[in-house]
Amino acid sequence: MIRVLVVDDSVVVRRLIVDSLTGAPGIEVVGTAANGLLAQPKIDQLKPDAITMDIEMPQMDGIAAVRELRKRHKLIPVIMFSTLSAAGASATLEALAAGATDYVTKPSNVGSIAESIAAVREQLVPKIHALAGRRTAAPPRPGPGQPLKRPGLAPPPGLRPGMPGRPGTMPGRPGGPAPAAPVRPVRRTANGRIDIIAIGSSTGGPDALTKVLQSLPTDLPVPIVVTQHMPPVFTRMFAERLDRSTPLRVVEAGDGMELMPGTVYIAPGDKHLVLQRRNTATLTQLSGAPPENSCRPAVDVMFRSVSSLFGAASYAAVLTGMGYDGRGGAKVLRDAGAEILAQDEATSVVWGMPGAVVGAGLADEVLPLGKIAAALIQRVQVGRAPRATAVTR
Image 1 (tube, rainbow, N blue to C red):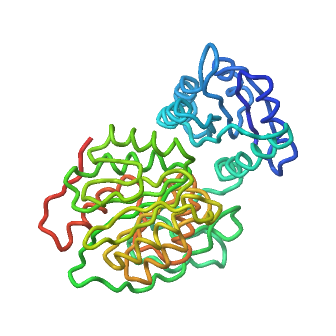
Image 2: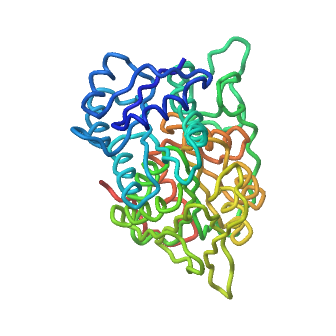
């Protein structure tokens, strides 16, 4: 049973969250608190497996509460409750930088309390299971290079000897991907040169993307396109934050932007990011096509578009995230000769998306977060005169 503490200064919102979690399989609300200050002793007393946290509260707001919590409890998942506004997005990103794990948005434009409860439940329950379920139900995973310790079960095939990371998830693990299938050979371009990097991420992605982009050089010779599962407004604020905090130019993608080296294009909330060719230029295009994998923007849509224009000259990375968005697009990319990198389980907040890619045998490399930037830099130098070096921070 996953034990949840609800922290919010509004009696109505506290009741809404408690009601949304009541009856959810495997979840129990063990307590509530009216602000971040009152929550601190309850965290130590009740020992919750997950916490929902409002942002704006008296005495101690959610951001300060997360910072205080992380001094004592590094691993408890904290899910922020935010509004779909510029102020809410900015505060949520600040909370994530302070150590919050994920967020959900407060319901808006709903006609009844029942609809509000259903909207919160739809967002919150899967996140709690994904984030806290691994802490309460999953046995420890073996480290890199160690066999799976299960009688009669050989380590799953698929990763070349010495590859870092973890090849798959034990059968029976809740929400885990299947063991890795064999990795198929990749058709390479003549000189091995790549001309674009495509990155997909979801839960835990803001922090992972920040760490990767902060370590890339300003003179990166290729553009980067990114799909991070986020709602409108949040993606714009996230792009602005990355633009201020990383060496690269980072923008929220709009229609008709020409892809330029050393620039990162973030898919906007509620729009798929696709690419089109105009003469020798590659331009961004936004699509309102139906969601895929319950997501818009979807990583699969972006990956397929990148594959159609760049083929084997593409390099894709799938970072931490819930679900399996990116697996289908990764297959299209791989069939076109592109290479795929996946973040390893140990450094992923949720090993859903990268685990699905690894489980399907589509990953050329499985790396911890701290080594991904160096791998990207090394790969873009192939077929080019060496010049890019990792940024040391």
